[in-house]
Image (cartoon, rainbow, N blue to C red; front, side, top):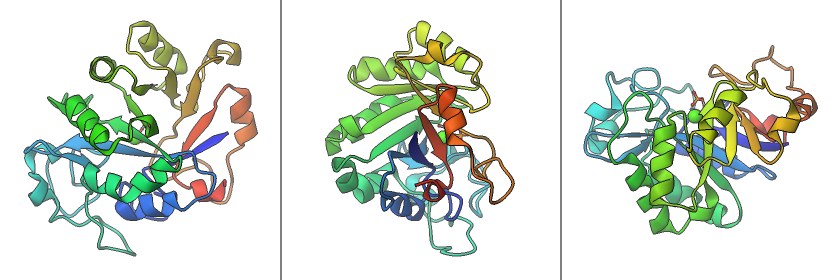
Length: 241
Ligand code: G3P
Ligand code: CA
């Protein structure tokens, strides 16, 4: 089973922050880090899960209504290490580029199914190209049209399609989104493992705190593997490595 840090080491550190990514990058055996991108009103790529800043910072309103300099003034809520801010995607690459050149992958989830941010695909492809890190990136989105666009811009891009059920991921693949990997919800494996052969099947979990088990109970990764899941996105990868 391949293990990814979901929004960084987001169980113990604030999600989608440089701190959570730095902690993840230090883990031996980690396949990669998953993170989410949105676009500011001045067209900058920032790393934050929600369309709004309300849940994770003291601010209110949509990311798309903040400029980069305005959004950088906000603080991420945290009991410890309260100095974290919403990172620009570029800051994350500055932090992780060396580890990525050693093999660490990044799954960039384009959060564009609520607001189909104009130009997001071009911007992220250009940025990754500038760092020469194309081979270290898996792009994903729930929004299949965005992935089609991304593949037109960057034909070699590695793409994973998100949906709740794995059958719906495959449906979108057949629709031409260009994904070679399926990113379903872990309880959405509604096809037999034989039908999933040849795909990376990377399962995500729900809620902020993972795994969805009583504290102290570990997920049974062997059972997930038997269902055809090849990778898992975990908030607490350090417990499994
Ligand atoms: O990419 C897998 C997973 O992160 C999708 O759900 O809501 O955590 O972004 P969410
Ligand atoms: Ca995500």
